[in-house]
Length: 353
Image 1 (cartoon, rainbow, N blue to C red):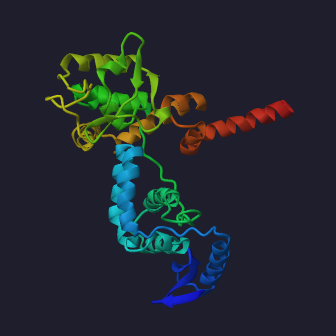
Image 2 (cartoon, rainbow, N blue to C red):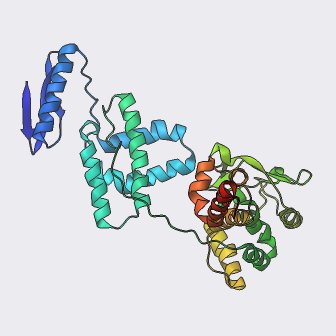
């Protein structure tokens, strides 16, 4: 058998079950020769597996329908669908799964970086569904290698999230319309994510134990499990939050989902409206710097760090998956802790501060 070139691409022609089979090997003749020799050896041993032919676009549709839709959370499935339709299928749609190689994906990533239209975070995010797709493709016999593994990806620059001080958080809550003060307080004083606040139901508010049972999140108008298993937890409910939620209970409309915060007809609030209709007007009235709703959660963690709460307790309160996540995201807010540690070590060694 041999190496054959067609339209700039090289193919290894090898015997499989007594018939010649053409296997795409890319545009590099030397690499194609190496693969050809490897295929010949495997063919003689009866170990050669020829991937089933399918284009990237067709497999993406198959994967989304028969695998992703059954295993992924709706918000993740939605995001992967957008990434595939907007970026990956236009780039690789007509390429066979078995012909897509590491160098093709690396060239695609490099091209996006040169264009400069997308952030490093967005480019890296595209590789996640691509990598997961090929993991399944290998198991299903449509590919033999994962071209999204071990890529050189653009470095993500650390971007500070704006946050408020405790006095500013109090001013923000006081500047919010009364019916929504509890919503803002949940972000500032309990560190809850926006979806968790909008998905909070009255059966999760325990006034007797002074706790909130965070076990649901609202997405696309439906309740689902929170971001991670660690996100589900019972957290302390400060007296101020308890008072605001009790006030909310007296005016809360009936809701089919039993939501604490909802529209007058009981239907779920839109996440974008919370910014436009609640948070932004309150920030403007109070004259505070602009922050996002996630910035309220950031403010919650920063306030605990400032008052000396242990990093392990902060991890539990913020419900991060690991203490390393807390350190990576918020360790830079502890410069005094480093100086204190240095002074303590010197005191221990030399008996002086």
